[in-house]
Length: 328
Image (tube, rainbow, N blue to C red; front, side, top):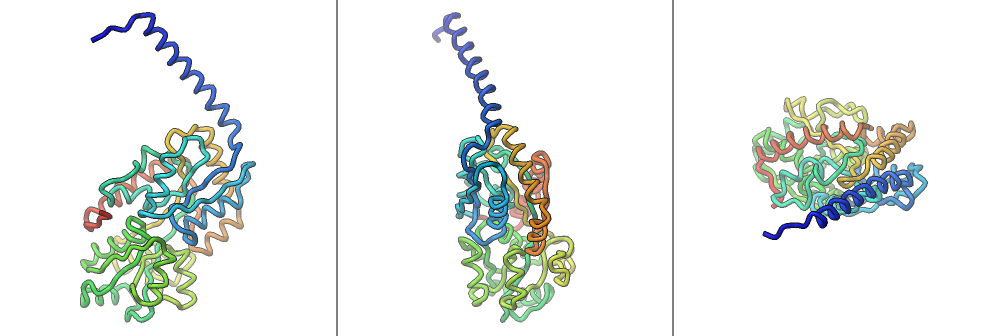
């Protein structure tokens, strides 16, 4: 093995030290000037859903001195868009509206993940959560959870439940329901809820555990029938709709949405994004808009989001394992 001359070693150490010092100087300077160009906010699902709505509110209300451009990159249960951000530069100019699926569930569902749900991201803030709403086609002869369970036991695998993709909270809510009731139904994944809803209304699929912001307006219009909400408590947006847990104790599935940046994004940049998210989603008109949609603003520190994400990964990996669900 060749030895390294002391003089050469000193030069390597010195150059490494100088490079590191330069980066330490450069990062705060860059962060102080942040942002000096438009910010791309990636949404991992098509337009029209809750993550898209939240991203567009952030884009409309942001006062960062630069525009925030929403970029929808759907596919693979949100993995395509999340992976794009995970592999983007750690400079705060590409961020993602993460979901419970992309940042808590998919790691258990997919045997080969293109990114690590925790190591490849820096948390910014929780933004909101929402119940999923169990809705059925109007022709399905059930009006509550007990009637649905009875029907499913009498007609195993007759029903299909739709979702906007494998690994979404909409998907795993259905898997949790199957597991806890001992029933069988077929999962029908779509590329987005806007493709699933026409089939639900038309009867090609019979039920969904859809995000409340998209499902509740259609239920109020009578296009589909709302059966129950998936949170532990009833939603203020629909207080007359019972929870699944009222008939199936212990059932709980909450959809959440949060901002993440690529791993290694400087803390001053994260702090700037966090402060802006808190400002925007505390605005009275924004809170009123979200509540009408069935979304509850839930803001957090980056550290609180990291802890919450870790607990959700544990919870949903157990659900996925017990249900036998897989994306592969």
